[in-house]
Image 1 (cartoon, rainbow, N blue to C red):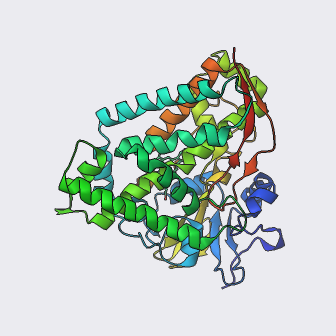
Image 2: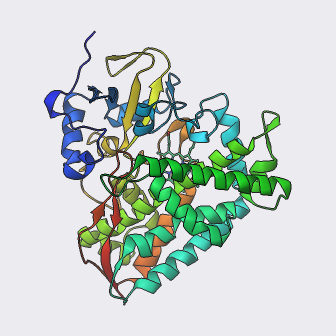
Image 3: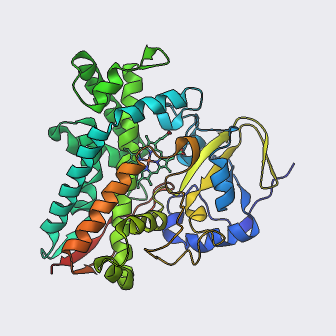
Length: 403
Ligand code: HEM
């Protein structure tokens, strides 16, 4: 049977440059209206896949038992074949194994641990913003945004300070490609470095457990057995992978959006809008993870289309978060937007485990900006990230003026 495609108007969703060189919002608007579930044709050696654009479909499919994450949950990975962490890393593990593993990791984030981490985030954000205010032109991405999430995850995992710069560097190489021609081999070796690092750490903490998340994971049992050192390593990695770049790009996006929308920035500074509400709009506006991918484990119908077992199905958060049937004037950045049930953290069983921390980081940043910065100006051209998964910028030259 021939599959309904989008024809010549389809952007190549497998090419990172697509998301930099095109008005993707105009594209998705058209897709939602005309072909909300479409077949993305194969390109060269790259297989075809389904793309789902409407909010209601995306939200419902996050819960669908016929869609598996085990071959990977990011398009790049699924198109290349299986995710090597499938079945052991939380995000790419299906039930029945997923639920007890998720419960274990969640239980390691005790209120005490989270409370301490959030307090450190608040202090760190205030210090970082204070340090760059009145200091002339600086790169917000490097001087501020990059400094918050990685330290937060490292605080959560009690990673020694001396090791953090290496982890940040490897993680950048492993996920986002800031240059269109970045090397896949470098990304692979960076991923290996991170896993090896965590294998050593997990073994150390298993041998001499302390009062930290890694020690708890290393000594707890899931379905009656200890996790292997490899499983521990990929799940620690999963926290870094999930928590660093996504939070970083949302912070960068927040500052850019506030500069582009001076009325909203004034409202935030004047306390006319709750910081919690502003955080949700930043998350919707940024949509750090453009899409999530799944693989059909049996035939199913999506939006009247026949999906076959083995087909790749992609859920486009960036489109769902701008679906005009759910969000009024979706391309308006409106900090007081309510309701604002964006899908930036996904939905259903794999809903982001770090959502609480990600929100705390953004809240700390917005509070520090609103409380300590009078003027924010763009001082150069933001440099975009080239990625089919990660949305945003890797450089943002700005200046902040004090009160
Ligand atoms: C899952 C987004 C921050 C750890 C997810 C998912 C999304 C997401 C969309 C669902 C994946 C799927 O359905 O396949 C984000 C965004 C963040 C953020 C936009 C920041 C703005 C964090 C942080 C952490 C984290 C700070 C770590 C503390 C995880 C983990 C999962 C996950 C472990 C897998 C959960 C599971 O499979 O049960 N995240 N995330 N994320 N996230 Fe986040």
